[in-house]
Image (cartoon, helix red, strand yellow):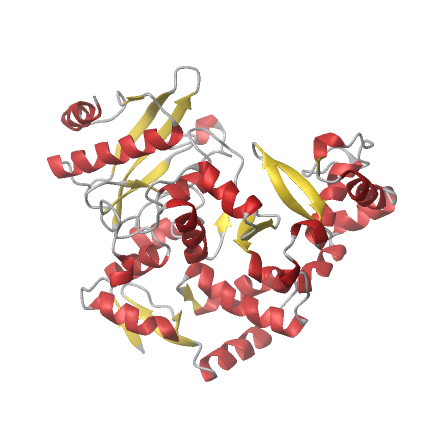
Length: 415
């Protein structure tokens, strides 16, 4: 069994996700390439300084602008939005998703909708057919019989379940509001088909690992089960793992500091060996400054840090605290980890005042072992300047940055 160091673990995950050793994508085409490199991009509506998806792409694409995402998704139709935990996926994967979409008919709230509002889904389809693209706001609807996170109107909930069924798709957005249309008017014809269920489930077995890049073998069952939306026994999960090992799709792996068995794609073993030897793949060469030269702010929903991975990979305590009451927050409302080199060394809480177009740093916290020298200060200033430019800020308020020497250095570089 191959074994890798903790540093190789970090570098592989960061590099596979396009975050290290620096931005290697540029422009609209680079935005599409970055999303494919990530396997999926989680979307979120909160816009405190920027939305999570834009922060994620800003960390990968040298000259990223939010309109780049809308271009590749809703004009070029290279990606589609899907799922209760909303992600954007490559459009060519839609046939695999569609094979499993009928399973959403078994959701209890879907059943309740059809029982209490049997006319809602046919009415929504009829309206879309007649009127073309519509948002939830365009439907009058009726009060929904039971509370739903998806909306107060029966038409809002009907839109949501028609979307989960693949009958409608998101064709555009106004701000972040979804604009829906019939699938056949949104989906490129070559992808308007349904994969065999067995083929789709096998695809998601691989997607389960591809999204994480490396994973504990014992997590495979839960991940695969969630992706294919049905219960999987321990025996079935082990059978699939044995099959993937037999086909040499995956290989076992040991990681320094972990007693658990990990799995990797067999095709990634040479890359892991190269990283373990101290090399960096030529394909990962940055187009601009490295993360050692200029820090990157890590989005709150990043696969490499969210859901406990920050602690596991970087020994960095990180919980997105937006859903916590104020008195329970340790750091702040929208705190972002700071990537310097191949490590998370600090965090900051940014907020954009859109009246004055000032980017306020409401809080800043260095890790105990974080650097405090001039090189780090330069890298921090560079990262702040690039981020401010992306969100359109005219100035940056850094009064919360401590220690004073670091703040003074950063302020001088920003002025």
